[in-house]
Image 1 (cartoon, rainbow, N blue to C red):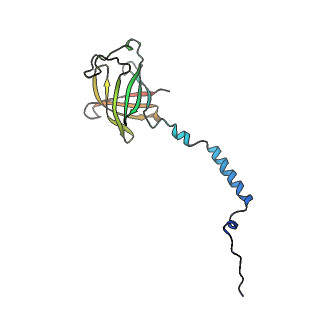
Image 2 (cartoon, one colour):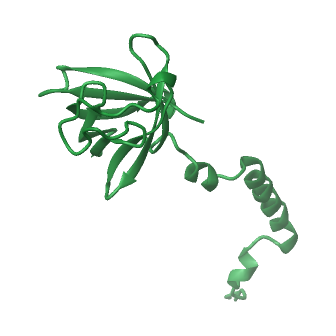
Image 3 (tube, rainbow, N blue to C red):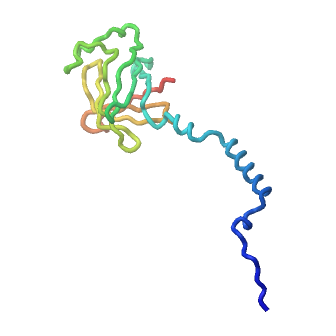
Length: 169
């Protein structure tokens, strides 16, 4: 003798309607407690050197200038936003040997051509307005993006000097 059982519909295999709500409530509560994830990722400024940076004088350890780094044409450029040394606020680049000769230091583009190279940016140049010399440049972020290590060099990076810039709030 054969007993025929009725076929189960796909809906009958799901938990009863009342049993699904606690799972949905728990999921909604977990998402609420986790907080917004996407805005935190979108607002992460530690991955990019774009922004304002305070330079520190190597000799006096005093703030020297504010540099604005921006992206322009796929590369980073930096200009002196503000000279912080009172007696140098109106300085001009007398030592420069290119188009910047005799131009005001404040507002001058001193950093150009830096492109991403792994976790750093390189292949660019930086001008030292104090002596008018142009050096190859390489930068990388440190201390969770709060510091920028600027390496200026001639020839190879090992033959240069690193200066630490601080991110402005």
